[in-house]
Image 1 (cartoon, rainbow, N blue to C red):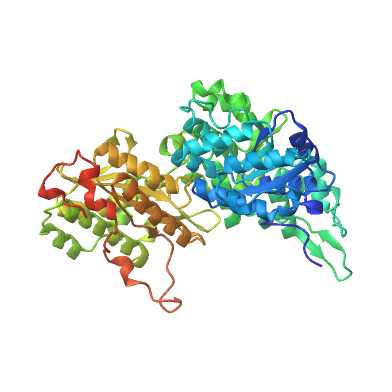
Image 2 (image 1 turned 120 degrees about the horizontal axis):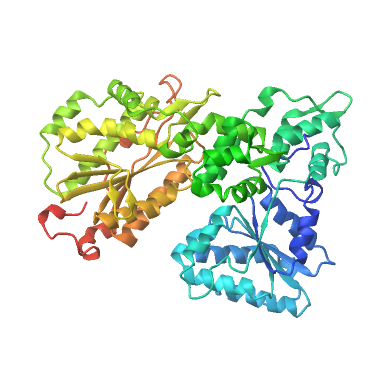
Length: 600
């Protein structure tokens, strides 16, 4: 008989536990536009799928339509996905006469309005269930008028809308604050998706809705609730590890062992995403509590900035609602044992220098990295060759800087340089150093090459729009800006699509290099394709030339165990195909008109 615990996919029907009162509220609330906020794996998609399951019954006055926004980047793609969703649920719209071909000619707001009117003629109401709503952030940047029209349709009251997302969707308010009408989320009723209630969580542990229930004694149930903080995914994850079945068919959970609470790579990824979506003060608070174990509100107030002390009760309540913290009497502790362990393991890579100092976390200093960089240094023959190399145009300069980063890529991937970018966590697994430490490592590799070629290397220079990671230049004419990001950063694409173009515009510079640093991941090729496509898009929209030079900071397999021969082209300078860069002077008229400024 199969393990009954579901890890890795959404659930509905008998597999969906608790949330009944929440679903009733979402369907009966006076507000017809609702935003449900939850952390990763809190059950947002499962909640929508369960609502769809409940309201798809013949006696329901609602007609549910599940609209998954994931993977779409334009308004046209979202509209096409909406049409597919309607066709997928076509049996629910029986009696609604509309032309499918004509439907695909309208935009999403118009489609929803027409659909609402047709259903109203049957005394039924459209129930729009929107998943992965964070996609709307990018749409708001590229097509705000489309988003404004969609908001108008959702706010008219002719349909009921339930949107689920993480808290990052609040960025829409900042983006749309300049609209002549209200920002997108104004008018939405916000509901926090809490962890499961104790009774519902215990029912999940014992699989009370399953034909074949699982034996679990009361003491073990309490331990599971404590370690998981009633988080639905963590409950399923832990119970999946504990599930046993003997030769008689008896299904039960064994006792918890310490390694059952170890943080897997998958869990670490979820925790990191949630952590990065918190504010700086929330992150600092969470690490303080993790480090100290149990702490009172008064003790926390003594450790944070006086300006934040007045907000402390609200901050703690918010972290409690999201499941990151929990209250035990007068003391606060980390919500789940899994999260606590992850915070302690990865704390050295989570915060900036100032934040780390505020919670007493030690870091590697620059001298440590410099010593290692000298051992894993650039070859002396390369340095000697650079000393005699002339630079006569901006394209030659950009070509040279690109070659520096290709050299460093070779050091990292082929000559043990990955050891400078990676450290070992307490669990023995490799983890990237902090972004700041990696910048310092890159500086110590770049410095000898820059000195040999008489190039100024400036780390974290102040621009008119903030601090850039690197600026390399010869005088004013030859300049190249560099931005570095860790692959796990929530701003991996924003660093290329938003930050670097802003820095280039502010500095009146055409040439940039984006350096994503990767540990081994199944998403590497997908992320790289997206980054290269984004670099090409910025060439067209901003008239800039950006090269993406990633570095794989994981230990390579030995030659005797490798599956394939490495691609030699990865360590060679390849031409950049950026059609719009051929006429950068027309697009950026502030560039000096001289032979030094020929495009790449």
